[in-house]
Image (tube, rainbow, N blue to C red; front, side, top):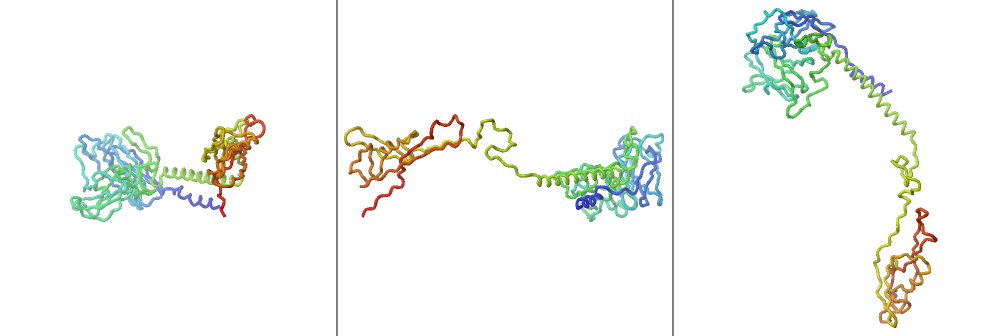
Amino acid sequence: MHRYLVALHLVPYFFPLVSSYTWSFTTTPQQCATLSLQISGSGSPPYSVLVIPYGPTPLPNNTEVRTIVYQQFDGSSTSTSFQLKYPSTSQFVAVVSDSTGFGSGGTSVAASVMSSSDSSCFNPNVTVMPDFPFNIYPTNQIVQCNASRLWWDPTQVQGTPSFQGVIPGGQSFSIPEGQITQVSNEGTGFDWIPSVREGSTLIVVAGDDRGLGTGGSGTYTVSQGIYPNSSCLTTTSPSSTIGSPAGGTYPTNASGAETTGGTSSSSKTNVGAIVGGVIGGLAALVILALAGFYFIRRKTASKVTKERPVDLLQGDPEDDHDPSPGDLGNYYRPEPFLVTEPTETTSMYEREEGGAGTVTSASRYGTSNRRQSAIGSFSDMRSATPDYEMGFTGGTTIPSSSRKSPMQRQLRPVNIIQHDDAGAADEQAEGQPDTVELPPAYTNIQKPTTN
């Protein structure tokens, strides 16, 4: 039940509300012709439209005859018309607003002006100028989340200037005005941190009490900067790709190709945003369902799974290869018992009376490296075993002058038996296992006490 409540709580984030109004061009933009717009829906009048020149002028000698048009609708009217004094093949961007704020109706992409037989609305030899110029520092650039300074000459401004940011086909907004300061060689102005995503095309429009656009406009591409900074960005930060553009169907190049976005409205709530929200919501629900299925299945599997025996010797049945028939495995293979090298040797003894001397070398583990296979050989080995106290060889005692103790130590037989724990039948020795007999180690000999 908790999961369902969470899913219902997230639905409003994935499915935005339907826009309050839309707008569209009802006539094709043509040189010196009348351009009409129509509002549909329930906005908050009065409405207004801001038409901004976009791109270079098509006239010779780079003559700019286009000015920014700020057209207000009459009262609560939902339509307006005005003469478009732009030359053919030039472009412009339109922004529609109502009383709720600038750009609430959305922003068109760059629309193209079609040709006509009328060219009397402008002088192709005279360049027009705004009522006051504005400047930006750093010069001709805007960096994402890095402060820019907008400034102007106060002697040319009427009242307090205002600035707007326009993103073609995206969101338009009013630039917040910070503390106005005076800076040497930069006039009067304020600092602004643009929370616009890098790569977006941004048009900065300046105005004063005479209306929007009286200070002209400048087009910039927001850059990332040498030291990228995204601390000012949010999920609602404007960019150039926010759904379908507003304005309906209109030509976007000199050949007459038209937009396919339909009668879109506010960039925040246009059709593209609604479709994207629906798709995003469905994708989120699918992800939640898959995640829930995964955890439920994992929990069920942990209960059903039982312990299975593990063969520590032969390995897991899921190993890469199975043991071949007759293979006993590494754990069943016997390892030989390695006798250490002799570390203690006796002294050399010789027969002093008649016959050749016999020398015997012994260690605590044996008299030789060869196995003794007969138990009966112990008597022979014992006869040749040296005694640290009395020492004798072949039954002949050492002279009394070399004795260290008056008593002879009794010898004790020691047997070492090697057990064959495993191995193939053909590898086993015939008969009984070998018996290895070694002399005593003589490591714990105590001298007798003298009374």
